[in-house]
Image (cartoon, one colour):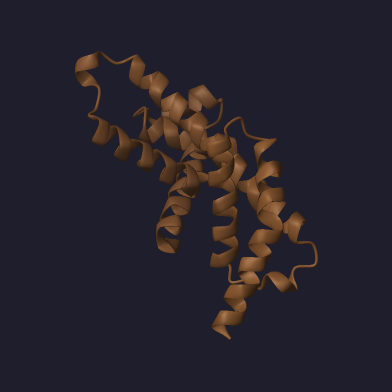
Length: 168
């Protein structure tokens, strides 16, 4: 049985890989990024343990996974660029080592994933508090809301962070 499913996956891959790679490459500027995204798309299909024969529209399914991965890639890049722009404002003596920079970027990506799905004002309040060290009163002024609302935002964001650590 395992051999049959492996064979089926191999055929599915060979039937759709070239199409998916071209499809993804039209949306990305880099062949290497397109290859990574296509590979990750198939990895997610494997991780979901879906029998490719059960898919009525396999290319639509692969396209949906790839589109999500491309969106995540762009979001990660924007986050990295924002971090590097902030880092460039610091005196060079305060720049973290390459290892620390990598760890900080990974922490930012985890935080971004944890906060995904929250409304923008909630994210802003959380980041202003945790990254910029602003008080609830200062955040309330910046976001033009009450301190009580900032408190609710913080509770919502912290709950989301806690739940994301429970799931991982």
